[in-house]
Image 1 (cartoon, rainbow, N blue to C red):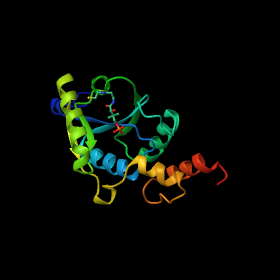
Image 2 (image 1 turned 45 degrees about the vertical axis):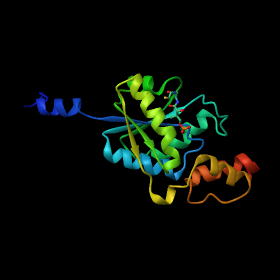
Image 3 (image 1 turned 90 degrees about the vertical axis):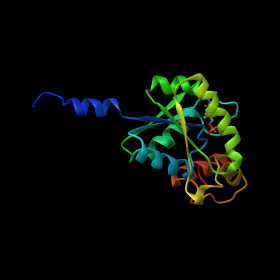
Amino acid sequence: MQGKVHPVAVFHEFMKTRAVYPGTFDPVTNGHIDLIERSAKLFDSVVVAILKNSEKVPLFSIEERVEMLEVVVRRLKNVSVTTFDGLLVDLAERCGASVIVRGIRAVSDYEYELQMALMNRRLSKVETVFMLPAEAYSYLSSRLVKEISLLGGSVRGLVPPLVEKRLRSKYTGPKA
Ligand code: PNS
C-alpha cells in the first residue's frame, strides 16, 4: 500500500464538507465565536468570510476585522478567515463551500435570514444551515456592543479581551 492512496481515503477527501460563515463582524463577538466553534465541530472546514463593503459604515477597517478574527480562530485548526466583495454564493463557489452557516438568535432574525437563504438557493446550489448560539449570547449583537462601548459601558464577557481593548481605544484613544 506504500505510496498508494486507498480509494476509501480518496472518497472521504472528496466527501468533505466545507462551510462558509459570512458576516460583517464589526467587531467579532463571543456569539460569533460560539457559532464558529459549533460549525468547526460539524463541518470538515469552515471559512469565516468578512464582507468588505457593506451598506453599513463599519467602525473597524477590513484589515482590523481580519486581524481580530485571525487571532480568535487561531486555535481552531479547520477554520480560516477570508474577505469578500460581491455575491456570497460566488464566494462559496470560489472556496468550494457547499454550505452557508448563519446564526439565528431570535424569531426576529428569522424573516431576514429566510429571505436571504431562499435567494441564495435560487442563485446557486449552496444550502444554508441555521444554527443557534448559546442562550447566553441570544441577545448579543455587534451593534449593541459598539453602542455600549461608545457610551462608556462594559462589554466584558461579550467580546474577546482583544476586541474589548480595541473598542476602548476606538472610543477613548489608545491610552485609555
Ligand atoms: O453580519 P451581517 O451584516 O448580518 O452579514 C450579512 C451578509 C454579509 C451575510 C450579507 O450582507 C451578504 O451575504 N452580502 C453579500 C452580498 C450578497 O450576496 N447579497 C445577496 C444576498 S441574498
